[in-house]
Every structure is written in structure tokens, then in C-alpha cells.
Amino acid sequence: MQHHAGQAPTRITIAMKKSSSSWIDVKSQLADHDRAGLLSLVQDLYAASKDNQAFLHARLHLVDDVLKPYKAAMARWLWPDMFKNQGTSVVKAKKAIADYKKAVGRADELAELMVFYCEQASGFSCEVGLQDEGYFDALVRMFEQALIVTATMPEAQRPALWARLDAVRQRCHNIGFGVGDDMEALFAAHGSDA
Image (cartoon, rainbow, N blue to C red; front, side, top):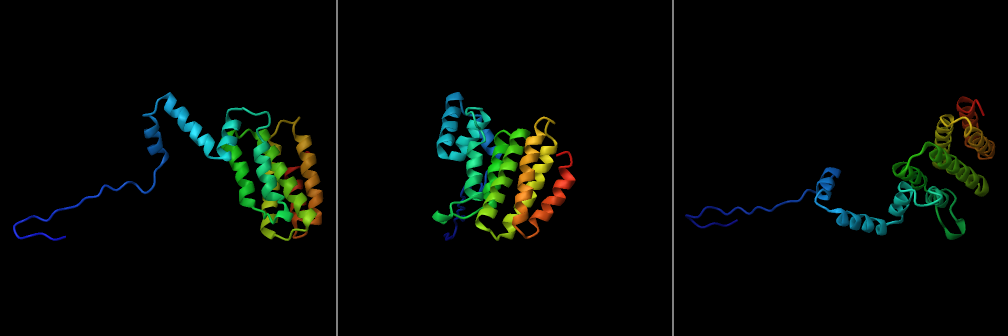
């Protein structure tokens, strides 16, 4: 910065915005919106993505089958169409469960999604002869979570879930990598009243 004799140097200040915002920032901005403004914002969020639509439909109980979009996402990522060169993604399949938890999170529906995950992953593994240890590790972890959640269900709801998990356990003996043995041990530990 140049300055001439007898002049004080000029300071240039630039107002910098925060590089990241938080919920507190959003909340303070929302306080200035009226009802019409908030509805417009929610409408824009709704139009922005299918995930937002599924979240709102589930949270507001606007569809008969709130699990349908979450199951569709899991089916896509756990049992992809090999003829279309689609790949698997445990992360994206698990994200469907996490998204459902944020939207509604009912224990019975969460158990249904976990059991469905196990059915899809085990079915795909057996059908195509998958050889992916990370995929199998995620399947075993989800199997255990499904057993734990099933054990918390009312007694009348448990038998159907146990039966489906038992079918997964039996199917997984054909996979290898110790998956069937791990599931045997987990089923004995957590599924004792099956």
C-alpha cells in the first residue's frame, strides 16, 4: 500500500463472511420469516431432492408405505442390476436407514428396514457369488443390529422377524468368509427366544 509523506496509510477492510454456517445461524434467519416465507422455503426444499420428499412424506405420514423409498434405495445399493454395470454401496444402503431414523424412527419400522437389509445383502451375495469381505462384514453387523432391535419388539411382533432373520442365517452358510459361523453365534446370543 502506498502513501505520500504527510498522509496516514489507508486501511482497507473487507467484511468476511463465515466460511461455514451452523443450525444456530439458520435458526436466527428463519425467525425473520413469516408463515408464507417458511412454506415457500419448505416447498423449495421439497422440490430440491427425492430424499427431502421421502423425509417429508414419512415425517408427515402422507403415504401408506413410508418405508417404500428407503427399501428402494437399499435394494438399489445392496442388489444392483449387474447387467447395467451398477455397483454396490454399503454406505448408501445404510444411509437409507439413517435417513429413515431422522424422518420417523419408529422401532418396528426400523427393525423391518434392518431385516430387509439383511435379506437383500444375503440374497445378492448368494445369487451372484459375491466375494467382498467389506460387504460381508457390514451384513454381519447389520444382522446383529437387527437381532438386537427385534429383541426389543413387543412379543407378538418378534416371531415373524426372527423367522426372517433365521432364513438369512441359513442362507449365509453358502457365502463363506465365516459369515455363516458369525451369524450362528449372533443368533444363539441374541435370538434365543426365536
